[in-house]
Length: 372
Image (tube, rainbow, N blue to C red):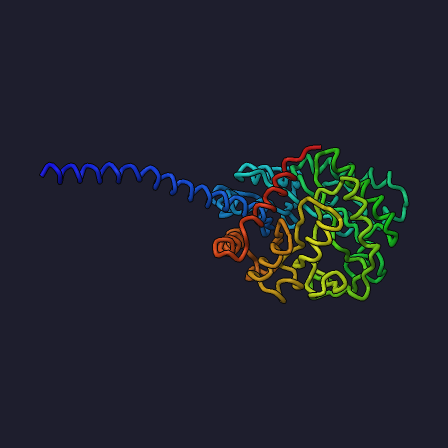
């Protein structure tokens, strides 16, 4: 009988000895999952529909915890009255609700792409074409300085500008005809863009060049469908990127959805192309910073590749932050929770490596922590 009790005692001791290890393993698993959730969340930037305020019952609050790392605001988020105070409070409330400081982004190129319009009480910002024609980078710096000071006061920390597309095609509906390019001269584009960036850096506002590897020669609009620049794209369109990266002034850049079979023989849109984002941009041009996608809901991507496939292809290509502006009808809008779940599923089933997620996470956090 004593032998039986002794055996039971030994078994109990051994069992309890393994419990801490089991608990420890469980804790480590939870930490790994939590860490993955945070990393994936940082790779997602969302438009917040037409919200102008954030209340305590807003469903967005849960997503702000770990499901997104950035928000992009549009004109629809600006109230008609007391606009300055309203936007400033909205941004403050969003940041206060986030577990990790957000990229607070806006498209403020000037001219036609000018969300913070004078009618709401904000500063004027002329188009890139207007400034380019003046052939005076001091003027570009002057206007960009006023804009950047305002952005900083409101709480923005990222401007999706300047556009460094070279106006090769004067009839381009989305670039040249929209007055979004400084010039048909690539060197002039580079000079004005550097002045624009310098003004923003004074106020610690990061900028993002667009649209890589060049949208200026296109004849179509990727918002509406596929655009192929294979026969029109010129290597000179890379010059502004080369010079700004070499000068150490490129915080980030935004891909475009054009097809360029000269750069990717698979003829997939640039946003989904590893040949363009990883081999050309990171390899040949030596860019080590953050790459944002153009809006993943644009028809050139959404209609042709579908949500899950385009997400996987973009991440495999080397995109760090997926942008979903939600400037689409309600039935086509996406939530951060939905995007996050898709990416996480792909990581857990091995379709996307966690090492690839880690790469983007490191780039994103380095950019967020950078000060000028």
